[in-house]
Image (tube, rainbow, N blue to C red; front, side):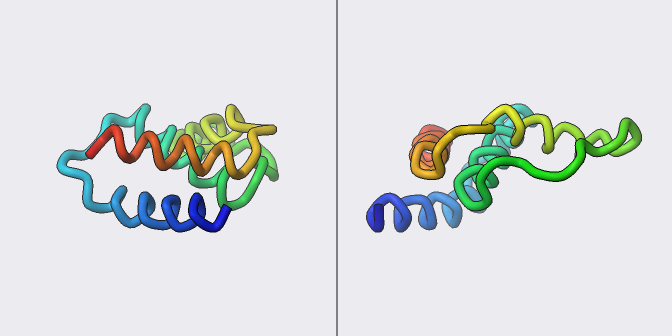
Length: 84
């Protein structure tokens, strides 16, 4: 687990230095996996219709519901590696 945690932390740093900005769907996936790995399942109410960005982020995170933190960390690491 400690090794995965360090890989995850490195991937978080690497995500800020990608050669090119990923498309919006990929950015949402990165966000959702990060939140699932670091905070667990989404909580709170879904943002209203007028907050489209918040709503999209909430929906993406909600799609990860039930996924174990370790699994989300590994997916995050793999996704960032594929974008380098």
